[in-house]
Amino acid sequence: MSDLRDLYQQLVLDHGRHPRNKRVIHECNDGAECRHTEGYNPLCGDKLTLYAKARDGVIEDLSFEGEGCAIFTASTSMLTEVLKGRKVEEIRGILDEFIEMLTSGEKTPDPEGLGKLAVFGGVKDFPTRVKCATLPWRALEVILESVDGKGQPDQPIRTE
Amino acid sequence: MKESLETAAPVSGTTSPWRGDFPVFAVTENGKPLVYLDSAASAQKPHQVLDAVRHFEAFEYANIHRGVYKLSETATARYGGARAAVRRFLNASDDREIVFVRGTTEAVNLVARSFARPRLAPGDEILITHLEHHSNIVPWQLLCAETGAELKVAPIDDRGVVDLEAFAGLLGPRTKFAAFAHVSNALGTVNPVREMTRLAHAQGVPVLVDGAQAVAHMPVDVQEIGCDFYAFSGHKLYGPSGIGALYGKLEHFEAMPPYQGGGDMIRSVSFSGTTFAPAPQKFEAGTPNIGGAVGLGAAIEYVEAIGWEAIESHQRALQEHGEQVLASITGLRLIGTAPERVSLFSYVLEGVHPHDIGTFLAADNIAVRSGHHCAQPVMERFGVPATTRASLGIYNTRGDLDALAAGLQRVKEFFAA
Image (cartoon, rainbow over all chains, first blue to last red; front, side, top):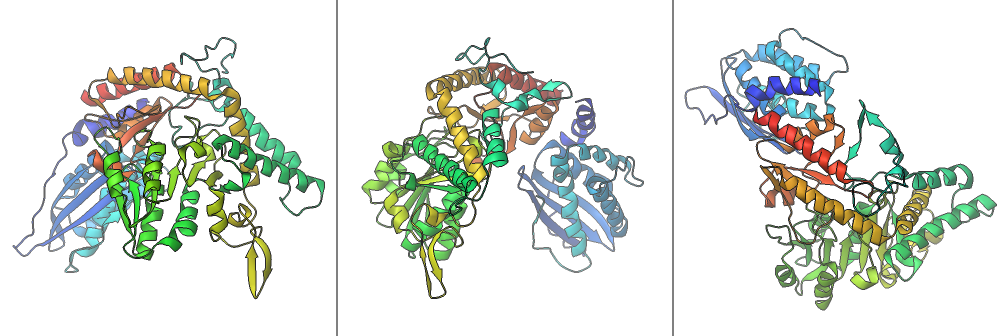
């Protein structure tokens, strides 16, 4: 119970209750590439639209709309906060490391480069909740694949 | 860990005289006793069922039918005995009206495929209600997509009660089949299935009742209901999973084509054609879940030995207590407040997502279910993404509900802090 409380303490008290960048990025007409993708976790009903604005290999802006549990909300909020303004290549690395941390069999207590995102490593102790934490990251994966003039992704993603 | 049967008060709900029958409650997690509140998803099994299955599998097992040796004769007799137990349990009039299936889901699919499909033409209609489990929605949607028939849905009100007038109004000359739950798994609502069947029959519409959530809570009499088909699963009735039963009127079973082809369901096979065995074998292709059927039979005998009066009285006491303790939690909203309900509580807590509630309660070894309960249309109807559900069985006590309430209080305080 104390592990659980610690985990939630770190996640919920801040990002879960006061999510950052919870807004829509409307179509851009300034030469940047604007993308959005939908994510859905049918198991618990987490629903997400993740928005990104990319220009010259940099994700200038990231935001989201959606409702879900505290782990999902915190993960999404922190994703937007930490990754905003970073290069696509750099984001790919963080994304891989984050997914690896939550889905690999091995315990990775303090993965390099994840910084404060490493707190989500604790979610691994609650296997049914891993999908809540990874949903926005799976959506981000789709978005990253769609930038560089490849156009708006049309498939919503689901974690089940 | 076992509670003493001698000290138990049978009907108050303070203790459960049957809790000691269920070995699972002897197991603790980090020193915390199990508070099992997920019987609507699957019930725990008493040693009477576990022992019966083990004894059968160990000492009486062989494949059924046709074996001329003793073991096969015994196994065949046990399997037949289980069928007779189901027949008695549902008060069907003939063993041939009972088909063993994997569970309610397979039963609904069987009826959809073998009974409804040949009767459907484009523009025909199938009527269900808004409170159905996905297993009583999706098979009909698949059928509609194939045949051009249309799925009609009778609405429910804010309490989770089916609007009978609307239900009756949706039954028309194009309606070829009606399917509805006896008890809602997401709301606990008990549907007036006898009246609904009467309304459907008045329009010449055959009826399937999904009894998955009803059979552990009340006696079922298919002749009294008058339905054409009634389906349930063993694992909601303290029996094994992977086994269930479909009741169907004999005249229907005799007229219906088989559901699946294979061994055990034929009379004779040649390459020029095959004749099928009579019901129920016609619908039981392949070697069935023999041990599961024996376990289901044992579960039925277990419930019958306790008696409905004692079960209903215990469950009613728990339901009243549950309503009281949950009402004491501010910010808790019950989803599903039908006057006729079983002991099942579906709720949302202001400011806390159901999945967070579930995870917190799990840390106290309290097992509830969070999610849409395979009833997404119900969630949409009430404007919630999910609920947390506590559903009770005969082994539950008032103490379980007090533990739930205390756990919810702690969750609330944590998230409000």
